[in-house]
Amino acid sequence: MLRKTNPDGRNNADVLRRTANGEDITGRMRGAWVIDFGVNMPESEAALYEAPFERVRALVKPFRQGSRRTAYAQRWWLHMEARPGMRAAVAGLSRIIATPTTSKYRVFGWLPADVLPSVALIAVARDDDFTFGVLQSRAHVFWSLAVGTRLETRPRYTPNPAFETFPFPHPTDAQRRAVAEAARELDHLRTGWLNPPGVSGADLAKLTMTDLYNARPTWLAQVHERLDAAVLAAYGWPADLPTDQLLARLLQLNLERAGDGQGR
Image (cartoon, rainbow, N blue to C red; front, side, top):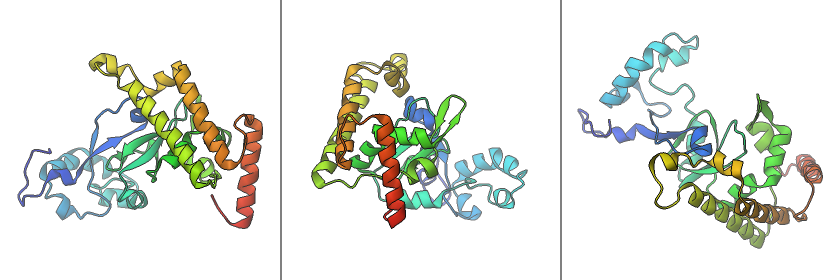
């Protein structure tokens, strides 16, 4: 479809986007693509992208015509939930933070901002290492486990209780830099483990984020410890704070900020 031409010369790359789901974070990027006519492209304009439109007309329209929701049936060439708020939030960013809705381990990863997240991913419209580090720290992970739900045996990350209620630290500039540095180190080492030089094909496919956390080598535990220490220092708390006390302090901070209207 990328190579095919259109009658008015427009490029199909306008409506073909890479996409990602939970497996792309916990496993490996599949290189999947999706046809995306955006939020409100008229049918007459979408039809000018001939090959993508005809594929959607053949495969999607019959399914959508049977929908009980009138808007889904009438606007069959558009995604049912096009998420205009998300699209506006990520505009101008180079990358976004993403985590699977359900997974064995609460892992956050980076996605290029032009990748369209599926419904199986929670996207965070931030591109800074500090936010990434706080979210991947044990403070946020344990908070999300405590307030979240489960799907069978797997924890479910639900944004309202897990993210919206989480009290982020208010760090000094030095503390922010320390968290960001530890976050970059974690991302660098995980990426290196997932993509060792000279490994390809089936052997590379066996290296996944879930496999890494199943094995949890010493270096991974150590870099997480450094990240956790930096994040807790940003709260002004000791690095060896037991989990129950950590959750109690986070809850107290949440209640204090809710009371004075400060938010996160």
